[in-house]
Image (cartoon, rainbow, N blue to C red; front, side, top):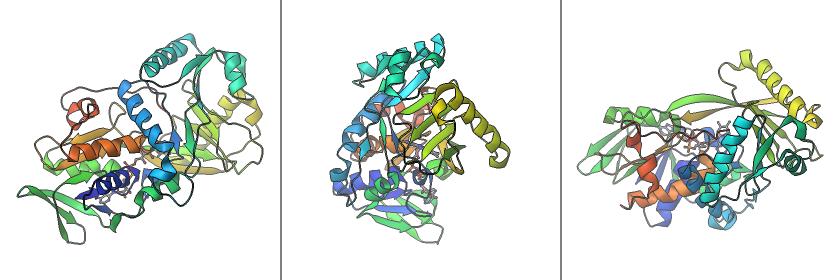
Length: 367
Ligand SMILES: Cc1cc2nc3c(=O)[nH]c(=O)nc-3n(C[C@H](O)[C@H](O)[C@H](O)COP(=O)(O)OP(=O)(O)OC[C@H]3O[C@@H](n4cnc5c(N)ncnc54)[C@H](O)[C@@H]3O)c2cc1C
């Protein structure tokens, strides 16, 4: 079998297929984690606005809690459950959080609404008077060494540096054409090539609407004092921030897009304004480091998963829209089941044909 893409998704799928006894080769153009997987800061959360996203997150958290053992990692892989707080500054925003918390609770996610005073107890330094409430899940958190997690998925796999240029059905199996001119035969192919998944599949007649969207993260220098334990998100202020285990404070203007040179001053101003409003004790933190990454986004901000109808032996796992790291364990299990012929209920919702059939499942609780 062949898996195209050596990001966290391709590696997790390949690992799961290998564990089930398949001979798998991972074909990666540039190197393990050279795409979005090498930029993401390891955030893991269960607070979502759709059932399907909650289910993927919940299954994955059970895996993440045992990540060191499950991945036989030599370095400890610790999910720090420091909590995520989504704050609301208006009653409308609070009503949306409340509806999401209700749905999350029905899916077993232990989130809850909090008053401004409770929020200020959870997040030291938060200005209670700046918000009307928030939503909190104590099980949300992050891996402080997310690249070690990606590498642990890769350990022991057959990963080849190769760019795939074409896929062709060939007598009940697949021919995988490489840029080197070499051709491989594979009984099944899983395409987990991030943004490039669409262009690999288009010649086969599958129109997958996955687009690249630039994203930017601002980092402070390491600070020894602990300033911000939970991650704080304000959609209304387009702001998210947390302090990593390294001491660096990570902050984002959630609407930062486009040219870096033109935008960086404006994005810094957004962060500064939100800090003054919500977390004034961070006012003296500066962010000398700006890191650019790319989301692979679909129209409903949910991944495209599973078999490609009419093309037997071809599977997709792409379009993760900014949250592929955290759900990689569940996605790997679901794709490996599909390769074995068993279709998880999640695929009825997130299957690749939903775009053509107009069955979008918009996820709105985004960071
Ligand atoms: C700034 C930023 C912050 C993020 N924060 C989080 C977070 O906190 N939590 C979270 O869960 N997610 C987060 N994400 C999203 C997460 O990083 C991605 O959803 C996830 O890494 C997707 O993994 P992937 O394997 O699908 O894609 P990628 O990591 O992009 O891997 C795709 C791979 O395919 C390879 N490839 C492409 N075309 C070919 C080809 N033709 N032949 C061979 N190889 C090919 C590429 O080289 C690449 O290595 C963030 C993303 C960004 C950019």
